[in-house]
Image (tube, rainbow, N blue to C red; front, side, top):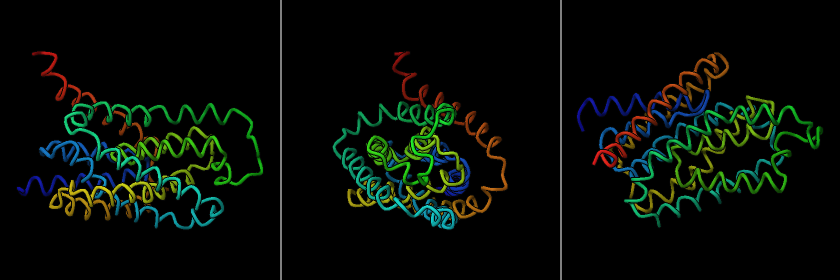
Length: 265
């Protein structure tokens, strides 16, 4: 690898770690960075999952006090997310590489749409009365319907970890939970469990590009811990708007890169 590639991947992972901890959407930085340096789509998906996982761990550790306040029901949520993450990763193993490569811009688009419209779903839910106003935040997540939704979302997050965090974030926003810090903490914790199951599968399958992964792990760890500390001081609205512009630009770029030559042929 060149000095430019090493520096770019480290900085991309550092920024992704900060963004994941503060607002979500860090994979809009780290995943395209791998694609930009010609890592194949399926390998980039696996490498990005491995690289960003330590950053999720450091972010979850930074939110440990928030998570400890909502212990009840957390084990069930974690188990569901691990099952879904492992299932999604196993599905990747049985997906033809050509199909995954061709579908990569679509996966990026799906992640962007969840990131963009998740808060609107939250506003609709918050306008409705709670089914059990005395239930804790985690107990409210453990209804039968929501458990099934979490399983499917975790499965998608395991299949495409580079966009899974945004899907999970949008899902929990749509449940109408008003504690933004808890949602962010839960997203970081589930990132550890969902991606952890997927990471193990990807490592055993031999799809990870380790030289790139180690560089990004270092950046992700630093960014994830720093992001958890900065989350209550940064302006999340400004960061989110910046990520919307960046996410839209990246989505358009990869649609043009992958599908442009096909349309012009």
